[in-house]
Length: 221
Image (cartoon, rainbow, N blue to C red):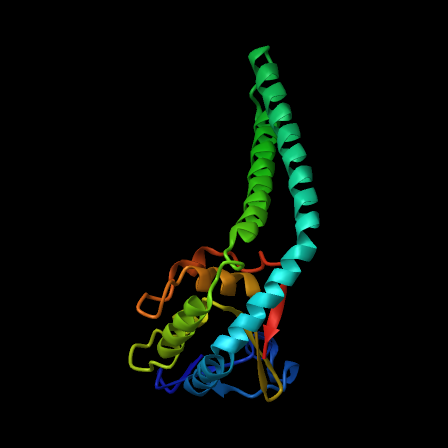
């Protein structure tokens, strides 16, 4: 939100804004102040080689536990894809044999297409998470990543800190006088694995990752 013709910028609870001040007791927070607190905390507390290494180790353990379940999900989704393709083929055959191309038929075809696209997205999400590098990430990569990302998070002159924040943090939630960050171990592994050394740019293509895909979201205090 802005105040005094845009002179001040601050964060305001949407419940307060949309439903009235009595719906939330959280005060308005100056945007620059909260941004600085969040970026500084992430840079100094999270972007430390030993902390990042520990999170990657935890991710490896989580993956081992999830491997069997992921394989079962892929098998089930693959069977659903084949069923969808068979239904689509049957519908095309029925159309060729005289089924009228009316609204009902079009709707059925659209539903089959949408169902197939959703199934492919689920399959892609599982395979993507399985392909994220973590086991072969070495200490040099971790050190380089932390050095590069920390510098960018704390670089106030560039104004890009919030953009790099989005590499790892999916949500910043205000609870009383606390700001709670939540992010994905998977995104962390992908970002570190894509950085070779400190001379390389921190990956900026992380926004292709859809929020909520990771079932192993962990809080970053």
